Amino acid sequence: MCKKVYTIKLISILMSLILVAVMVTSCSAKDSQTSNDKSQTSSAPAKTEAPKNVTLRWLGQAGSSTEADQWRELAGDVTKKYPNITVQLESTDWNSYWTKLPTEMASGSPPDIFYMQVLRTKGYVSKGFLPLDDLIAKDKDIDIKDFYKGVLDGLSDGGKLYALPYDFGPYVLFYNIDLFDKYGVPYPDDNLDYQGFLDRARKLTKDGNYGTVISANWDRVLPFMWGEGADLFPGGKFNVNQSAIAKAVQRHAELITKEKVAPAITDTGNFNWDREQFYSGKIGMMLDGPWNITNIKAKGKFKFGASLVPKGTVTRLSPVNGSGFGISAKTKNPNEAFLAIKSLTSKESLEKLAKWGRALPARESVRQAFYDSNKDVAGVDNAVKKSCDPAIGKPYLTPDKWQEVYTTINQNIEPVFLNKDTAENGLKKAQQLIDDILK
Image (tube, one colour):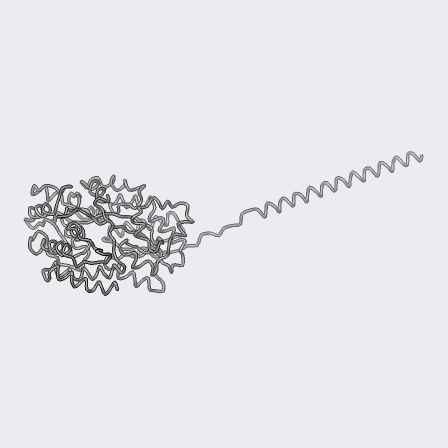
């Protein structure tokens, strides 16, 4: 009997121990699962907020309604890439832009994005542009080496980059093929010198047509000055009062006043006056850059080609210039503004500009698109490529306060083109004023 009771008690104790073990195992498993759930919850990524909607103001310059429409299309492309960003273009003509820019920069609420040209970089960027170096360093998508180094250098100041470039290019000589064919005049070629240029201009000047067109603009005369051996910085000082420069300016003005192979300038305040004359189809030759092909195609109803600028008595040189887009130092949305200019200077955008004939791309990777899309412009491939080569293409260096200096020069050489003063006298007066500006 005792054995039986002892056995029953032993079985009862064993069952209790088994039950406790099961309960402990169950609780342990539950605690483990709870621990895992907490671990998974804590390691889950935090929810990110949707990008804020931003509207950016873009102050730019356009030479025509065609150009303005092209810029608006690129602004729309920014929104396609970044739906939260809207870019509103505020476009003005070239001369007005350089008056409006400093006013806007000094205001309490300037545009977020600015156009900038290499020649004027030093006079503006340090006063209100945001350095881009840190933003570029953080963006792994940008291959800065793809951009033309000369323009990157030109858009930099004090070792900092202030704008991403979209184009660069030299001056070339555009010519009206239809007019040359009409009068049986040989097209300009790589051997063209100033005398050959003048001879062609004389033969084309008839029946209300003119051989060439010029403006009272320092930039348009520069290749002819350099062709005569002029050096703008003799001894390191900017100097326009030189005999070689006076000779080039006077001879250029006499295309109107003496040779009569160019029409008299009737609107000196219009930066595009000479271009508008060429678009009419009554002008044989005009000096301009690859950036203006888009307007010649849109407004000119004739075949046209391109050749090298005429060789002077000393050499043949063509100024190489470029432009880009920067960000206001006062913008409230620097990251979004950077994404916008990144898009405006992307391969896709520059390929569009190339196809439109609005720009020789600053990016090496898409430059061929310009030549492929403008094969209908006879000789443009040869003219632009050779003019970009250091043998002909020369960086256009300028002093500080260039816009003020540039305006002063033009104001004093304008009377020469209107036959109211001599180049020697006008340049002498200009230099006296420039010396005060650059003190």
